[in-house]
Image 1 (cartoon, rainbow, N blue to C red):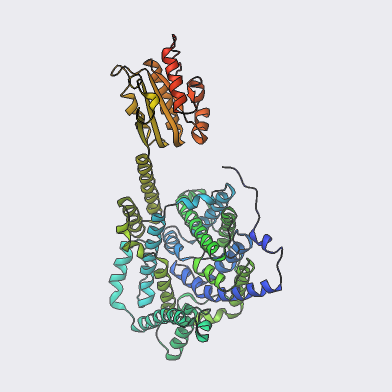
Image 2 (tube, one colour):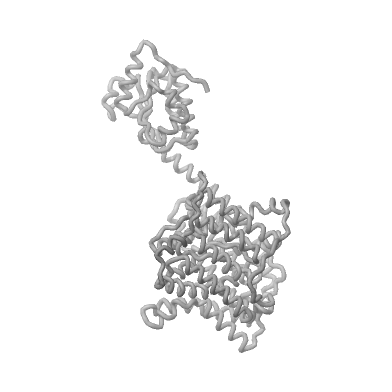
Length: 568
């Protein structure tokens, strides 16, 4: 890994040929995304155990920084549903001050990941792990919203799955019918608005409906209904005292190294999840606009945003798929659209914050239930039978552990299981086969004295035992005088494989068997040079099998066997 001093936000490149037409497109897209982000930002904050303004401040500050400094032209940053469970758990266990520290620490980790060019490595996380924890988070988001959706009175909602289910079950008799009706009506309106807009997409009314998100329609109508009918439903004003109509102020938490040590794993979890979410979102955006983002620049931008935002009352932020897709479909073509979206939200906070007091919490819960449903890859469960057992076990294990235990444990177990599966499958693909006189006529008459073995695949720590098959054929069991190893079909050799080859060469020398190696190219040749194997076999290397047989015959007929000498 090499340090990357190349800090160049994508905004600089897009402004080179920027014009009035493109600005108008970005302005319209930014306004549309702001409308979508407004209810989601508040809902994500409330579901995480924070005040609604925490989500708005995150959408404003982090949204601005991610767009201005990021490596994607159209990605929108802000609070995301994937963070709800983690933020709630940190808040419940460590408190608000430590949440600020953990978020800032995750920002540092993200920036360093981008600095040392780890952006591309995030793509190597197996899809089974991604689907497993995404579906698990969706289930936990769904459970976390039942309380406000049903209007239940739960003073302290536990962060763990069992405690959450038990608390909800005990509070179920206190279900509020007005809250339930408001939540159901809001959810049906959101779903119906989206379906109706899709069905009428080719008509004028459908083209008008599609840019308007169903969440904002449901939020407005639910607020008007609650106020007009004077329904006894909890609102933002009654539970949180409203949203301050002012720019967020700087706050410095109480910091100690003792608390920071306990926050290492939560910070790593926030950073890893933020990196995965943002880069997956950026890849989706690339597919929509035919572009390619800079993953390392994106991670550095995410790091800056997550380091600064918590000190101004915000929460963890990352790239958001729904808002990014909305941004693209609304005609955005540069990061200016994301900057406009952040400025519009700031204007809403400064001007229209008092109106948020009347927003009913069941309507926000309905929005998050809809988000949780769309967030999950539920069809993956139906298609499990099409995959092999290791894939099924990995996906289901990550899903269950995310829901029941912890996201960090789930990802660790998932990566460990996926790694073992990969090693097992690659080792099975690696094989060794004898070359007979039928394969190569040059072996005719020499089969008893010379054996040729051809290796395929990767000779790494999980497949070095293949050389034991050849070792068993060495004297005194046979009258073998020479062994030829054909490595032209070996695509990779690691340090363990190189060490196994060295040990085999020394064993052949000890038993007075001439070893000839041929076909070393590309990476296997490089590791052979660096490990000293080339020097050890300096006079026993050949280009191909035919040349190897001539060399082996020469060594056998030679008066001096010139055995390999070497000590480990």
